[in-house]
Length: 165
Image (cartoon, rainbow, N blue to C red):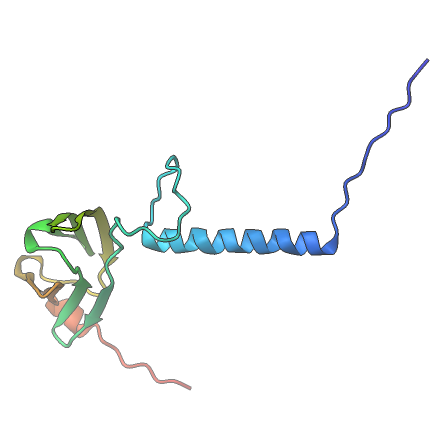
């Protein structure tokens, strides 16, 4: 004798579905915010999806542009010193690498505060033109790293004006 089995079908009301979609959208926004704050978040930490990470370093903003005779790269690196930064040019790729370690301690009569800020980054940029690798110059002032790279003679000649129809 076979017993008949009953199965319950769960249904969702339209409001519950919309609520779930809002939850997913909110989660994705937090995830994307976190990715901009810290491009490679830990997969294990309990706070891994928090959108604000005050103790990590962000990827630096970089401008790359060409002048008549050179390629210029500027990077914003606030709070860093030139000893924290490493610049390498390999072929047509420029790599900027840095690490920030900061420990602030404030002791006053009424309170005690200690803050730590740390993080590292590695940013590689493909250069738009060939450059003279042995004539590259870099300077660092007020949190701005500026790298000037003279173009090769061949790269200077490659500029072509194209007529637009």
